[in-house]
Structure formats: C-alpha cells, structure tokens
Image (tube, rainbow, N blue to C red):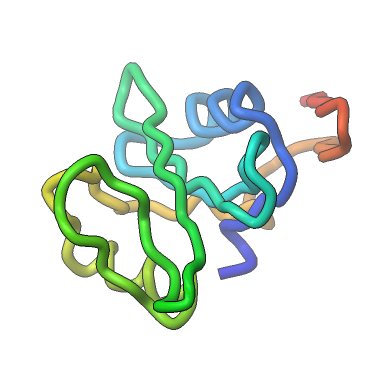
Length: 118
C-alpha cells in the first residue's frame, strides 16, 4: 500500500507521473490538495487522469461517487484490493499500481511547492 501512496503531490505532478510512467489502468494514491484527511485515487485512462476522493467516516473508508450507495472498507488498502478485484461501474479499472519505489527518477520532492525534476 505504501508503494502507491505519494503523499502531498499536486494534481499536475500526478498527471505527469501517470502519463510518463503509466499506461491505461495505472493508478496511485495522493493526499487531497483541498481537503485535509481525504485521499485521491488517481487512475489513468488516456487522454485523462480520473481522480476519485476517498474519505473516512464512522463506517469506514469509501470512494465518493455521484451515484449509488457507498461501500465501506476498514482500510484504504482493503478498498484498493477490492476495487482491483472487481471494479464498480462508475470507476476506471485499477490494473497497474504505479509504485513509487520502482520509478527511475533523479529527484521527486513533495513539498508545499511541488518540485519535479527528471
């Protein structure tokens, strides 16, 4: 799970990572830029990167969707595992985890002012 969690990176950096190193179905997790405590599940489906918010409630972790009842999980890891096994209709398939420890980058600093150097 930690290998796909990138922490505080911007939407722009996320899109560059998935476009450069990913393929359709590649995905990663990052912190939401606008909501504290919320995660973003980002999935590449060319030419776009789709972003889904993952929020925690007293019932567990769930993906915020437009339609349908949320399905709750005890952890973000279980949510991702479940959606990899069977993708709901309103999400892009999670096929290839974009593991940060396998990327061949010189520098990736994730600070308040995202810096990206290849």
